[in-house]
Image (cartoon, rainbow, N blue to C red; front, side, top):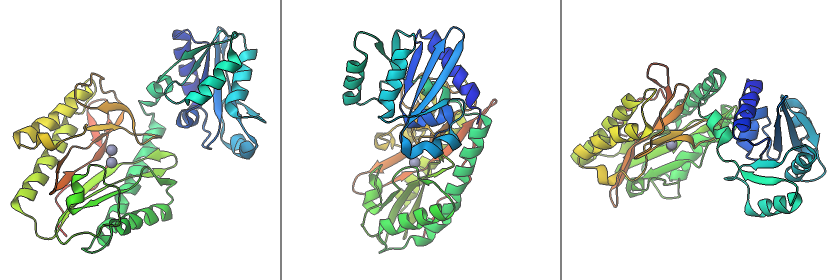
Length: 362
Ligand code: ZN
Ligand code: ZN
């Protein structure tokens, strides 16, 4: 990973924002900037006129891991929480304002930060600076995402073969998760969704002990983390004889999902991608049942920028990786969602998820 270029782009960014010193505590941002994948650490970036310096703070549990992983930053193993060690270092640098990640610093930590810096350093909320760098993936990140997406797709047949009326949703989730770990996944990128029968009308129906009914839709939405990067896919299958109405629901979502994908290209507002699928569902009479947004960015985290939602003005750019996942949910009956991951390319898009979207009935 090209940590040096990420670090200097962030340094340039904070100089533009007139923040000479930035405290980074959100761990995915720490990992993005210096490679540290452990669960406790903080980075301090000081950007002066003559260049920048980066210091990574962690505790004794991570001495070896920090040495193995951290790149482009001086490592300090502190005898106190990383956050405070970083602030003490900031107090020693000739800086007046300390930027912090306002969306991620807990209020109690903020209060401690305030009492440590009172009268010496101005605290400046700085939101989204690293996230704005992360929004466009570089070639190495795209390769990792491709591998994660491929692994996610490879697991789908195991889920299908676990699906039978009477089997608990958690059994299906277990088949996916066991195979994911066996294939080398770091873990799942979120709690596996297996929602069968009337539960498929819950957009986020986490796998429960409920048994799969003799007939109805089953939504499977899951992802793996592989070498730090997340995948995310949804397929909906049907058990038992399918009614004409359910077939119509499936086809409407399928068509909307394809329309969303086709709307993806550089320069297009993410709100327009959302609209493309929504209009298809409207003409099929299902738009009232499409109760969430069309998609989100994916990378080191499962939900990243950009958001693909109604009215969003952000424009797509090459290197963004997003999901396209329209769905409809009819309470008391069932739901359908189909989700792929899509890479924005220089000239359009590339669908990363290889799994077929033709209706599967079991
Ligand atoms: Zn998903
Ligand atoms: Zn998703």
